[in-house]
Length: 306
Image 1 (spheres, helix red, strand yellow):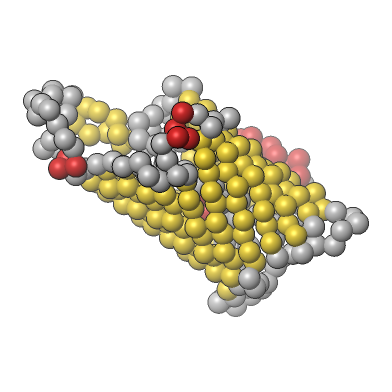
Image 2 (cartoon, helix red, strand yellow; image 1 turned 180 degrees about the vertical axis):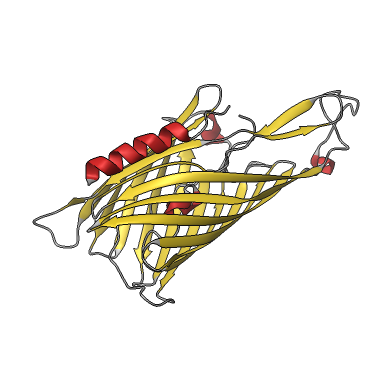
């Protein structure tokens, strides 16, 4: 059965269209417990209701750096289906963008293994506050001060495989380019991002409640732009997670999560660049609050590691 899953994963990767980069997707660090932010196939992957609130300030201390707030809600709908809602507000310099997405997932379950296919659709509202700019000249032909807002529909797709100790996901959350024109020329404000993620759980046979979880995330955009996260997290006493992430060899982060109860998980991440930016900011900070409940018939508690 696993061979069939791998073949389906390969087939799905081929039918996702290859697209071209402009504005970047928001970055996250505490995503290994909720990949719904980057993969709609994760919706309802576990048979419960999940709510996750994340706020992230990148390179604090530098004006105009990204501030991202995310609210995700997703749930199983019986054992074979999942659905969810993703709301994102991303602020960067003069940009203030809002995104809303609805998703649906279908799951193939074989014992402890699950293969899920997901799609999502919604819109992104782009807003530009040019009053934040201190311009020496206002007649730059490349700057259209009258084009300060536009809305674009988009949709995405993903596939996610997991069992008790392993997961692998492939997704393109927003497939369409976001282009805007002034009647003379068009400019591309957003190009698709492709994500490949995976992880493995190494359980200790001698220490109860301890395990290691190495994970990776590859992100590709047009123009051969490839970024990579490599992380290792450790679980202590089935309650406390601690880990380290290396991002693109020019940033390093540490994170911690506390499983306060079966229903509540609190997380914090701190990152620092390893390049020249290290002297100009006080790091990147990310906070996460996750709630998991059994609100529908057939839902149940489960011990999970990703």
